[in-house]
Structures are given as C-alpha cells and as structure tokens.
Length: 165
Image (tube, rainbow, N blue to C red; front, side, top):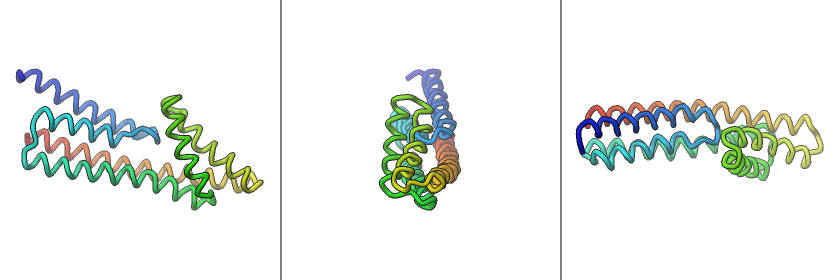
C-alpha cells in the first residue's frame, strides 16, 4: 500500500473513532463498539505487533466492560427509582428498536416513555411512574459518564498504538 494511502486510511480510522466517541452522547448509539471496530480495522491494515495485540485485547475488554456497565447503570437507575424488571427490560428493547427505526432520537423517547407507561399501568400512580422514569434518566447520566471515560481511554490506547506502530 502506498504511504499516502496508509496515512489516509489511518486518519479516516481515527476520525471514525472520534465519531464513536462523540456518538456516546446518544444513549443507544454503540460508540464503544464503533471505536473498537475502527481499532480492529487499524490492526487488520497495519498488522498486529506484540504491542498491537496487547492494546487490542485491552480495547476489547474496555469495550465489553463499557457496554455491560452501560446497561447495568441504566437498569440500576430505573430499579432504584422503583421500576419493575419487566419495565427495565422492555425499556432497553424499546430503546434499541426505536433507535434503529427512528435514529438517533427514537430510543431516547421510547425508553423512558415505555418505563413511564408500564409503571403507570402497573402501579396506577403517575408519581411513582415518574419516579421510576427519573431513575432511568439518572442511570443514563451515570452511564454516559462511564461510557465517555471508557471511550476516552480507548481512544488514548488507540493513539498509542498508532504512534508506536
């Protein structure tokens, strides 16, 4: 591959990583996975040295941990607000489906709305339903900061890989 093309591809992959990091603002957007896929692309194009393998394993662990933490923090927030597990699960599914159908804001509307409506139906008390919905929102906030921190760590590791490679 010509040197100019290798540089261009590397810059494009770094821009994709940055887009993944910025995409973390949208709760259902898989920004950590986007960063990881761009790192995988870098490894495939430039090869996996020993350092590259170590960094890619770390990136993989961060991506998996961040995605799991994301769901746990949102669910924990909703549960802390009083939501039933069924409402939490339906909210997660609704968020994913409606993000795919109406990106990027469909999931942002569907997830809390589903918690509110299910809890309103279950409890027959709009204040308690609102409290569960607020809990979900608080979980989203905690989730955002956790994913952002992990995304920045992933981007920094990827930059180390690029500059060492």
